[in-house]
Amino acid sequence: MEKKRFVVVGLGNFGHTLAAKLHEQGHEVVAVDTDEAAVDRIAPYVNTAAVGDGRQIETLKRLGAEKADVGVVSTGDDITASILATMSLKDLKVEEIFVKVISINHARVMDKIGVTESIFPERESALRLAARIASKGILNYIRMGTSLSIQELAVPTRWIGRSLRELELPRRYRISVIAVHDMLRDEMIPIPDPDAPLKDSDTILIAGKDEDLARVEQENEDDSTPPSRGRR
Image (tube, rainbow, N blue to C red; front, top):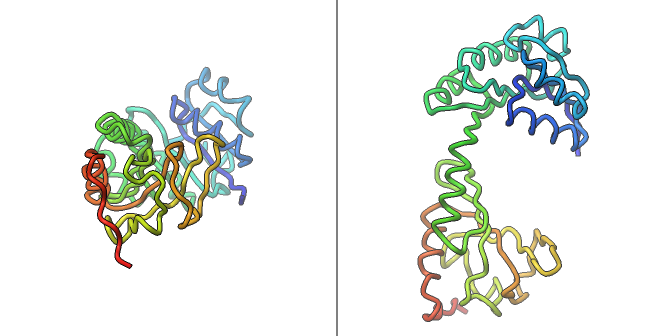
């Protein structure tokens, strides 16, 4: 894995967790916040932790932010601070900038500025939870865009004992199985054997458009009706 240099502006729960995880993965992390207590909490888990105003370009320069590969702005509910910190990172020519946003309008502003990605943790968490609690089969849910998602799904009863080749899911549902998780061995198989029968102890990671994934869920609610056989 290529090691990168990150600068994280704002050390609330999101910023703290992200900075610590990036450092744990072996990246160089510089973290800055105006709150001394927040800086003290993150200090053991990053390379550099500093009390300072991340909106100010001079503060960021002092911390070497112009050498960062990636900037992350997580300034809580202060949209003005978010905009100013982002602009300062752009002025320093930081190539990738990710910004935590708190509303759709906040995200629109960031998109106009030209950030790499606006992150809306509350909305994304709500979407994942809604997908999980609305269906007993969905174990995890990741939204990849406006209409594309990845779901971790318990193997439907009607699919147990059948292979991916036999099920012909890309043809029948326009979805792809990108991995199989053998729960008994806790082993993730990223390139599944198309001829291996699925087990009741497996989960599958499937990718596709939301409407196609919804059709999988709908058609597998009634386990009493066997699926039609694929073409030979």
